[in-house]
Every structure is written in C-alpha cells, then in structure tokens.
Image (cartoon, rainbow, N blue to C red):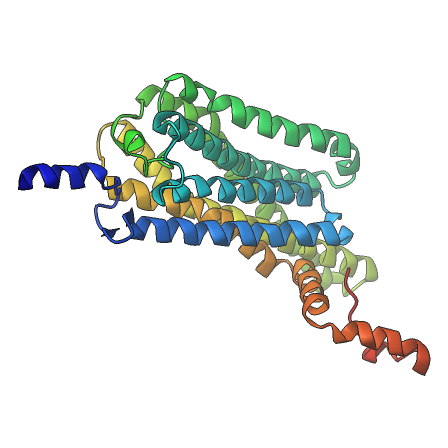
Length: 352
C-alpha cells in the first residue's frame, strides 16, 4: 500500500532537470522556474526598452549597423517571449499540449532566433570592415535595399538551417530539456551537430575574428601614421579631422566588439558542451541546463552592453525617462510662454 502511494507521488511530480529544488507544496521545480522566469523578465523588459529608444530616436539610425542591432533586439525579444513556454509548463498551465511537439517547436524557434543574433553580429562586423577599408565607396556598396535583403536572408537562412531537426534529424539544443521527453528521449546526432557547426558557428566566428582583427590593425596603422606626421610637420587642420574620424570609427567598432565578445563568451560553454555531448564524451543534465540558460542570458546582455557603451543611446534613454517620470516639465513648458523664453541653460530637457 505504501509502495503504491509513493509510486503515484513520483509519477505525479514534475520532471526536474536539476534534480533539486522541487516543492511539494507548489508542485513544481522552484529553482528552475525562478531562473527561467527571472531571465524571461529581464530579456523582455530590456529589449522592449531598446526597441522603444530606437523608435523614438531617428539619430540612432545614422549607422547602418543600427538596423542589425534592432534585428537582434527583436530576435532577443522573441526569445524572451518564447521562454514563457517552459515557465508556464513548469507551473502546469500547458497540461493539454503534446510534450514532444511542444519541445520540438520551442527548441526550433529559440535556435532560429539565436542564429539570427549570431548572423547579425557577423554582418555587423562585415559592415564595419567595409566602412573602414572602403570609406569612399561604402555608400554605394551598402544601400538600404541591400540592407533589407541581407536582413531577410539572415532570417531565411536561420529558419532553413535548423529545419531538419523538426523532421527527426538531430537535436539543435537543450532549451527544451525541462520537458521530460526532450531530456530523455530526444538525443543529439553527431552528423547534425557537425552540420550546424560547419554552416553556422564556424563561419560566423571566423568572420568576426577576421573583420575585427583587420579593423583594429587598420585603425592602429592609421593612428601611427597621423602621429608620425604630427611629429614631423606639426599639427594641421585636416589631420586633426582625420584623427578624430579615425578615433570615432575605432570607438564605435569597440562598442560592437564588446557586444560580440560577450556573445561568444556566454555561448562558448554551450557550444563546447553541445559538441562533447554530441560526440558522446560527456553528458550531464545540470551542465546542459546551466550552459543553455547562460547562453540565453545573452539576450539581455546585448541590450545592456549597447546601452552602457553608446553615449547617444544613453542620452536619448535619459531624456525619455526624464519626460516619463517628471510631469513638472510639461508645466514648465507651459509657463515658459507667459514669462518669455528662458535661457538655453534653464530650458527643460525635451523628449525625442
């Protein structure tokens, strides 16, 4: 009698990937729900802020890379929305759904969205490389039409490269391993893993390493030549402009390089575990959970790094928050017409 009741309790308890943190009172895996919900809230709120700021600030569209940044923000926002699926499942709000189908579709969508981010970072590096190596022909090479085509191809390529996983060839990731079927019945395939590495991970990584390495080498050579000219002939007006422009390009490249570096730092443990597990060398459920959600946390880190590194973005964001949380500014604007125009130093900050 006791053994049968214990069997019923074990069968009714949900599958906990970490093997701990299960609460019998709440009937859920508290630790996994906390981690996933926390990341989901951060990802959705952070990327909504980035999208809102870009929508309100046309000046941020000055660089063509801003289109790729927005593409990443939309992809990361969808990652956060899709992460509601495992959260709701652990909280028993998705009892009627087929576990196998839900797991496959969820893992496919997250893999596609992260592929969009990775491909966008590679395209950003190529765009900056063209802007620095071919500045005079950049406007003719990178046109708005070609930019839209490139973004469309990124989404199409990302959707196609993971499509075989929906039809039984391999497992593209461990994002759905909070489902019991995903963790125990859906296994990775060495052939499919090699296919993903050869067509996505390796080309994107090599492209980023080559382009940013070339960019910093060119900027260093450019700075060295200007310094030598200043030492030999003294300061001249056009050289100051060239030096300022070169430093500006280097600073903007550094912002994008930080985003790219953090992306690969957070994703590298996941990629390494993915290769080891596919080759049958190492398999651990806790390691799969930690590396997977560490990689997904990059969806929040992208917007955080961009907001901290871009001074124009910070300025626009500060003005937006000031206009939202300081209603007295509107009163100041209304009273300004009665008292006459105020000096520029005393005028309230206007929203974009």
